[in-house]
Image 1: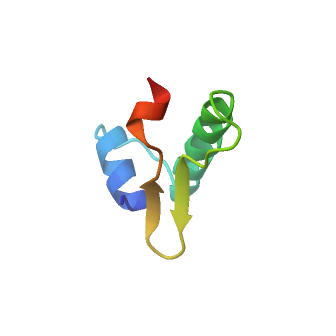
Image 2 (image 1 turned 90 degrees about the vertical axis):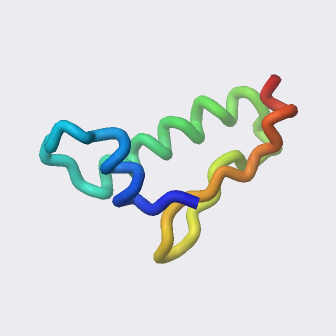
Length: 62
């Protein structure tokens, strides 16, 4: 489970001006790309008020 703030701090450690909506946009793009691998599987789940959680089985991606 990662909050938007944790993701921002990890991805943008050079103090660029970005918002939490930047993370939402990246998540949307990741979901689209992962859906191409398996349209039945939900890989990333949004947890209201908390952040994002990875839900895919790593073996399924191999």
